[in-house]
Length: 64
Image 1 (spheres, rainbow, N blue to C red):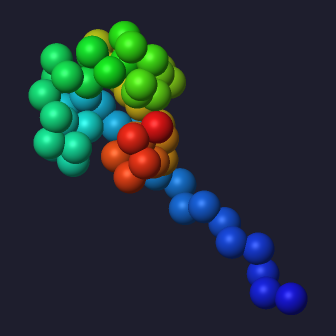
Image 2 (cartoon, one colour; image 1 turned 45 degrees about the vertical axis):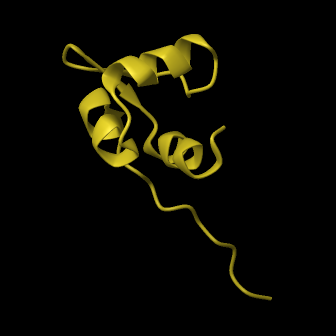
């Protein structure tokens, strides 16, 4: 039986990083979030909110 696949950890992402990889504006991301269509932040890094990088990449691929 093959070994179980382990998910590689993905670094937390700031809003600036999210806008860079998704091509969406800050305002669009906030609108998606307010509508419940974007993952919620997981914490803070300094004054910036951070998101789980896996959840953001999954959203980018599936739209959920």
